Length: 157
Image (cartoon, rainbow, N blue to C red):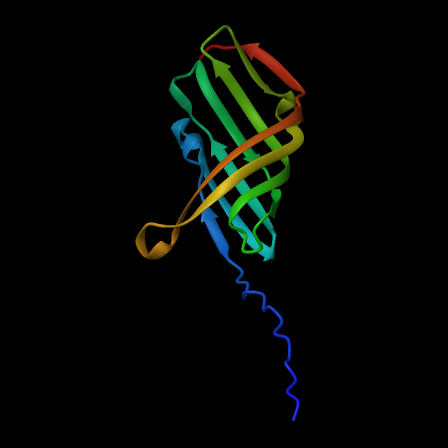
């Protein structure tokens, strides 16, 4: 009697969708309150939606970086489990009022013409850190261009 060997096909590992709640630590250094959500759409793809806000002065009226910004980003991950290296593309809109303790402050035109633009990013997500492997750390570098239509005013109280 002849035996027949049946080839075993490789099985793809099971994929899990994750939802992340994130914050940007360097933005906190400038006192920009921020939060972001990220959702894995499918293997290799995710979308992130960050929001930034700062509505106060830096210790005096002539030094400020007031901003409200949203910057959604689509990401492509090399790993099918959305870990490790990624590249992304984002669009953004920002309302702003900046003063650098000089004679002039800058604000989006009439307070109703936000900065519009977009760019690209690359990054790496370090997974499974901390308590019960629930914490992640991410490092990202981005480059983009934004259209600014602004007014400038005398910078005084």
